[in-house]
Image 1 (cartoon, rainbow, N blue to C red):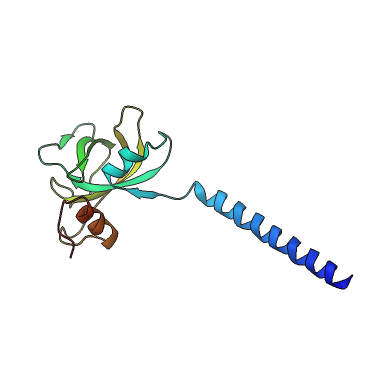
Image 2: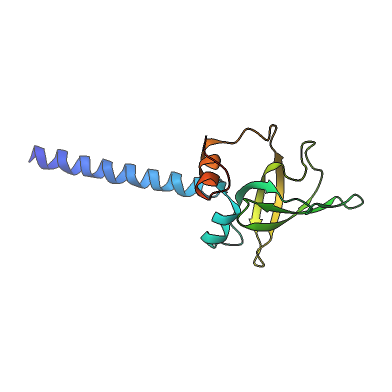
Length: 144
């Protein structure tokens, strides 16, 4: 009888811990910013309301800045797929064409990206290992 009570109590604790973990993960789901390359973002068919980070390079000859309204339009690319980006606000000092950037925001139904934040990389030679591996996998650059 004592063993059944102990087993029941242990099962209860396992279920309780599982529920607690599920609630924590559900609460964190809204705050998670997933990082995608343009190719991954197009392939995943992400929901238009999903907040995410998109990383790549500013395509050459794609930058259009309206100095009056601070409306910025450019194309982000991983040299395989391109996605138009729209942003309202000031740009980081290091932002320029062919520069690595990470933009935070969401994809629109028309396939463009509405950015709420833009981060420009400090050194174009630095690249996080997962991004470098992904670009090497796509044949864009040689893995180091």
